[in-house]
Length: 196
Image (cartoon, rainbow, N blue to C red; front, side):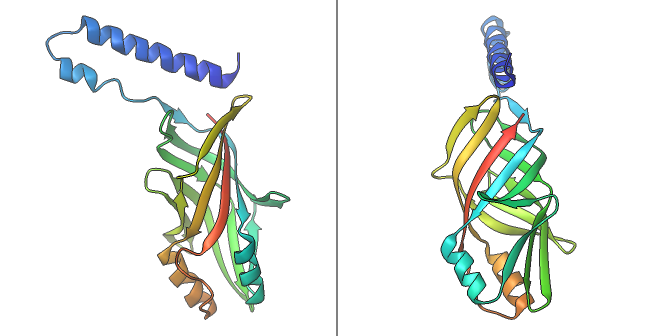
């Protein structure tokens, strides 16, 4: 039985049980209603792929700024992929967090800034990263055009747009002594393939 079908069946059974309990219930109907919260999925693997915006890539190259993956992230024809290591999301709304290993390194003129251990927060619309010993909001994540599908037990999320955050803009410009990085600079589109 496919994993996603088992999860869907489990959610249906839990909801059916909750409805049955509420129908039989006691006098505290309000308390019974609060127990029917959405099911939470514990994420187990696969990856998030960032396809860099072409205009932004050209702008960085023109200013001698290079972007490369940090192991175990990898670069391929579709973009840079970051392995998913964990996190939890709500089954229907997808609210929650998606954790990754690897990262990106920005370099120019012998200076580097490394950002790793990405965490996508779908509730707040952010992607945070560790830069040095500090956690910073690296990207703004726009889920407006999100398209969700399922492929052989894998949840696939497409159409996620990302832009550079205000904090990352300051950090990158200060590190490299440039003004090429602008707040809300389009970074690219993200595709998430995740199992739970």
